Length: 383
Image (cartoon, rainbow, N blue to C red):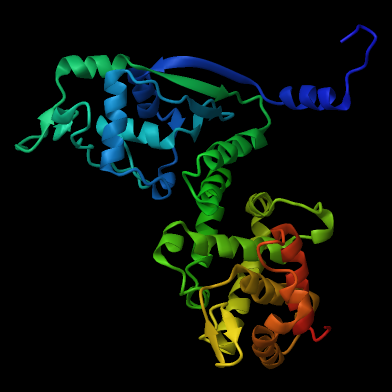
């Protein structure tokens, strides 16, 4: 750039955003990382363990990689104001190391049983190996002392987001890293973010997904979707799109980011939690009472029955449409609402305002505002 040439808008944006993030990086020995964890200067969020699903074989392969000196990706941490490191990416790797050496604590601060390794491709004799043998345990073998010393001297690359950085950078980095490899579902990533932002809010939110009426309304989810916490994704969508102002969003907004941003905003406003819970519980009790067999499925008029799996578009139209209708007219009679929901779930499949805004060719950012508005207007009798 010439001395007299002004930086472009893009260059100004890059300079501004880059100036908000301060990082450092250097290798740290596993022995030192163990000491940092023991001194409670490293937060790995034990709650995350319910979302990261490495089995014993995967953990054994990771320990094998460390023993053989195979390079592994860097660990990302964010420095809290207290100086404690908050793990942004690398929870499973660090947890495996701590479990192997017998110092990993669970959510209640109790030590978890040490990891017993399985045979691996290159080190078949790892089978039954444990960091240190336990008394009267004839089924395990201690890792030889020379290998223990060598293991602790292995170094891990750490990238540190320093405490002077914009705090939002930590959450954005976590979301980006864990989205790229599809190791977690969108909701599992969101759950981790909520735990990082406000664990009390996460626990509050988790109880919503256990609401009896909500569970009965979404009971047909298969095991895979339930394991990936799609039920909680549906609950998060309900909360977020019940309160978000669509007029403030761009035409092609990212649905996942919008839900995550709205939920993290709500996490910082506890005074709004009770009202959000009340709306959630009221809506799903009404939907359940309107027709317990509905489960947000397609209505087949010829056979007068609901068929197929739970459809997200039906869920958005009916559940979120109801919540938005109640925000307009909270005094609407419960009997009238039930009557209109019963007609909505059967009639919407023939309605152009619904049918033309669902399907593979329609963006979610287009679908959601339109069909929730359709559902709201039907319940308010404004279609």
